[in-house]
Length: 250
Image (tube, rainbow, N blue to C red; front, side):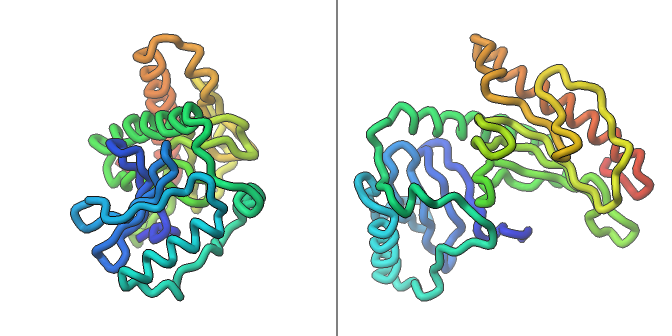
């Protein structure tokens, strides 16, 4: 499993739930986005217990989570909230979970749902594309594939695609393309994209912001804009990686 893969999550569109990895190969925990409910699921994905977070603090919800896990025979001494990166936590420490603004919660779920559909579509024709995961560093829904390998067969370049929530780089939801190379790259100066823009040199990738997408009133036009962003950007990146001296992705 890749770095952080053991704490990555996936989106389950039918129930609008973010799911974690299996515990002891028999139990899964999920967060239902519009009701803010923690779901405990069995091996058949059937809910066996629910914790409602509405009106509770993080400590209250976390305490109930530990209690339920312990009652199911899970060793909660290994459970921790610390992460190998910094996450904003002021609102979790001082505030309470709330479903008062259900419209905003539904919008967030819809955006995650649409992103999962579009990104997953590429799995049918991109070789070695990893499953779409929600990565806890930024809570983005994304995937990647190997764009180059060295003579030993080790990955020496990757291309990623996904959807992200607002962050310090972009102050609204956005789709992204990114790339990484073990070789130093100094000569990547791509032409502007038809939709979205490259974020060079501060970041190795391109973004398509939410407000540009919603300017297209027709849902089909919005869908085609996102696909055009990915297709045109991937064409540029895969062509560029072929210029690098080690073996490229085919």
